[in-house]
Amino acid sequence: MKSPLNTYQRRFAEHSIVFGARLLSPDLRQFLFRASLACAENGKTETGVIDFICGLYLQNPDEIVRYFRGDFSALISRNFPVHRFGGEGLMLNVMRDQKHPGYGTVEGIGFLLKYSDDLLELLWLSAQLANAVGEAASLKDVVAAVACGHEWTDELRRSGLKASRTVADFD
Image 1 (cartoon, helix red, strand yellow):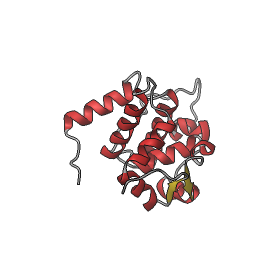
Image 2: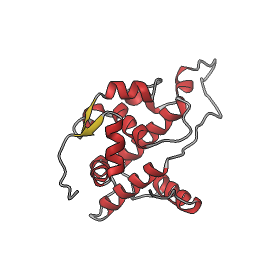
Image 3: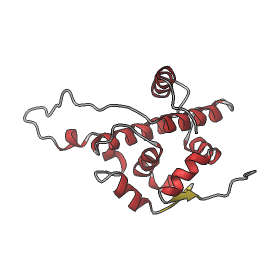
């Protein structure tokens, strides 16, 4: 069993992933933001791997089903009872629904960005794979990283998803 990240590792990884210029592509950053916002709206204290996969599906369902098979509708409903597809899910529901007289501005609303150790490790491996060829991590790098880790493929399987492609495995 692997040990959890220590405080320094966690802070370094979170800071690098959120603010690192070349670690994640803009699309992947948006998917991560989307998953974090959905977690916040559903009362979750941190974003995990399955939450992130659900965020990918909510933002771009056609893209993620190319790589993973399963009942995404059931998974989304179980994981995020409160959810919105597409661009609407990139804004807090409270901001979207709030009616204000005048200019309609809302001040002081936010949410916590906290990621599980497993998600940080998945994103870090994705960034390593992409950086090795001079790129920022994209969805394809996340898919490749998931395929490299039995823990992640097992977690997807327990949630009802599996990879669309067979990956060479020495086990």
